Image (cartoon, rainbow over all chains, first blue to last red; front, side):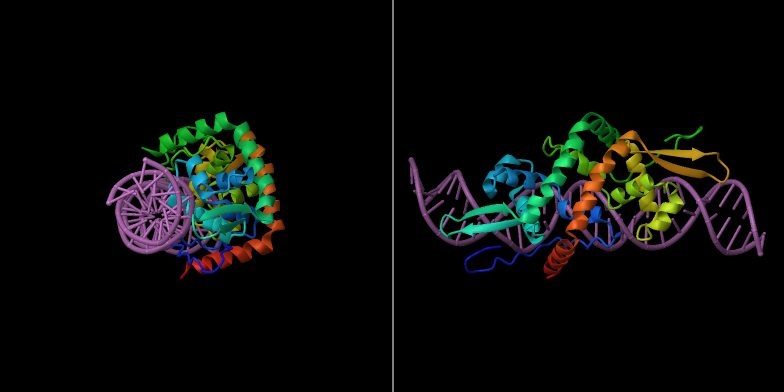
Length: 134
Length: 134
DNA sequence: TCAGCGGGGGAGAATTTTATCCCCTAGGGT
DNA sequence: ACCCTAGGGGATAAAATTCTCCCCCGCTGA
């Protein structure tokens, strides 16, 4: 977090265990992308929507709080930079780091696959959750 | 589930809401891949490790139960077929469906990215969870 | 007969993740 | 004064996910 004077100590209530699973790269990727809105946030930021209020407006399904938390995680994981301008009207921007840029193709691939199989997927997911609600 | 006579009604305790988020394909992909071991399971099955006990041996970190649940979800989502042979010593195999095959490249990309950035990632994740444990 | 393997699942605790509510600073407009 | 914007966070509830423990079937080998 690039701030001029004054650390905002975030009390991250949610600690996730380091995925000790296998030494599998996909698990690392999932760890970084996990969080309901992270892929969406990354895409939006990549598109140039970098201000918190803007993001919050675009994603009405999520609370400010949640987006803040997820953005903070993305920052801690090194995918985005948070830049705070001035102190008065307080302007904040998120930018992708090079690491953040590098993950965009991965998200793009996921995007493509999801779109290509949207029909089957939504159907299967719906059926599964119906079956679950027994 | 391909069984000769007798439906195994699974009581899926865990129902996940259909991700109503955005109409974003990546979210669908994440939904299908979500579950701590799913990407691992898919990779292993693709490699030819298709028997439950085998999978359980390879992934010692997960309980039989959990793997069964996740495999059942993969099946319900249409990524794998479960085939039960005979009824006596009870032999079971999981195979990828064509949908399951089609997601392999996606996992591969995630795999590559994760491996390429392993150093930074493990470091950042560790730092983040340390910070969280305050 | 008893242990081990290979298969399956319920119940409930523990953990993690998301959501809800309410409160704070500061400036600008009416 | 009052409300809106633009920023931030604590506390706690609710939901989703994983883990632990224990139980079931049937076959095989000692």
